[in-house]
Amino acid sequence: MNPSQARLGSLDALRGLAALGVVLFHYLPYYDKLFGHSFELPQLLTDTLLFGRYGVHLFFILSGFVIFMTLERTRNAAWFGLARAVRLLPALWAGIILTFTSVHFLGPESRAVSFETALLNATLLHEYFGAEHVDGAYWSLVIEVTFYSWMALLFYTLRDWSRLRLAFWVWMLVSYVGVIWWKQIPESVEFLVKDLMFVKYAPLFIGGMLIYRLYRYGRPVVGDAVLLALAVCHGLLAYKMPYSLFVVGCFAVFAMAVAGQLNWLANRPLLWLGGLSYSLYLVHQNIGYGVISWSYSAGLPGWLGVALALCTAIALASLIHYTVEKPAQRRFRSWRNRNSTARTIGTAAKVAE
Image (cartoon, rainbow, N blue to C red):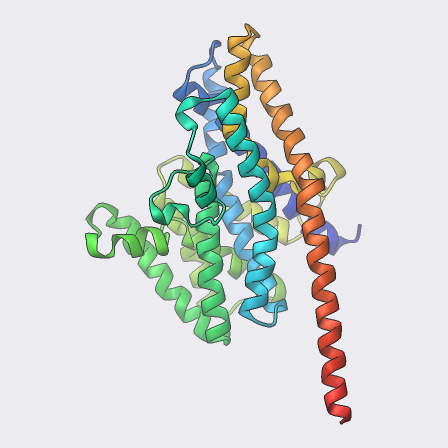
């Protein structure tokens, strides 16, 4: 693996580690809070795993980095939207089927949703219609899709980076105002600020995009550097201590990976985990809760139930990754390449005429 591949591979490894952190947070301290474990978690372990929920914030930084790279390589908004849909939806639909079925057989009963709600989840617009999540982890996917929509609109409308930067400045300022005066936001703009502009998380995406610009084009101009500093510092206001420092640390670790200082992470096990990360995120929470609850009903030791839940989630994630996620991506790339070739031949024929 050459240094460039290792550098990008380290980002996949970070994605895998972040997903594992989220899983362990849900299975240990969060399950204990919701339902209660039969064993006592060591306080140090509990305090450490509470940081795992902020692995999602690393996903958002990575998403900003990757999406800007994708935008620069995609010729129009339609192709961008189609590529994102193929990337997210097939695995999501498989995850919804598995989670919906598991919850109705294994529980927890409090996590069950109607069939109509499950269908609405398949669009990733369900939260905007007041519907519950099939799996609690889907809240971040709604934000992701909203971010993709904003970027398709901004990138393909404004085109020029200086105009895009101005839009990001406005978004950043609104994000600061939003988190500082969170409880005082007028009801008339609350949906726009909190949901459509997701001001608690937007600077994470913006920061990821700015780090991509630095990676792609070298030293940033002053405006970019200041905007990146604001994106990092936003976390100090948006989240409580000490988790705010952890979010700032996510930026630092991510920047180190992009700079090639964490290439050692690009090893086979972590790259494999990074590849599974999206599918693992989709199926781990409610299915895992059901497995843990079943293990207690069966009289198994609590730690064994957690281990079974983790193994089940990884097995299902592997199933989705290798039978749904990768084949869908492969077929889409093949179809896109054929379309591109046909378009090139058609253009050449017109020129020849």
